[in-house]
Length: 70
Image (cartoon, rainbow, N blue to C red):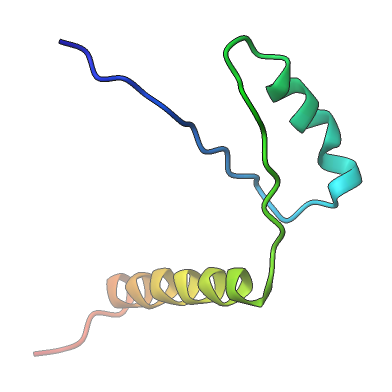
C-alpha cells in the first residue's frame, strides 16, 4: 500500500520580498491539485534559528579542519 501525501513545503533560498515572490506563489497555485499557498513572513525567530544552524555547521567544520588533540 502506498502512503498518501497531504502537504508539501517549499523553502526559498533566501528571504524574499512579498512582491518579488508573487510569481512563485502564482506558479504553485497553477499546479493541479494545489488547494492553497500561504506565505510565511520572516521574523526575529526565523533569523535566530538560521544563525544557530549556521553556527552549528561552522563548529562542525572547524572540528573537521582542526580536530582536538587527545
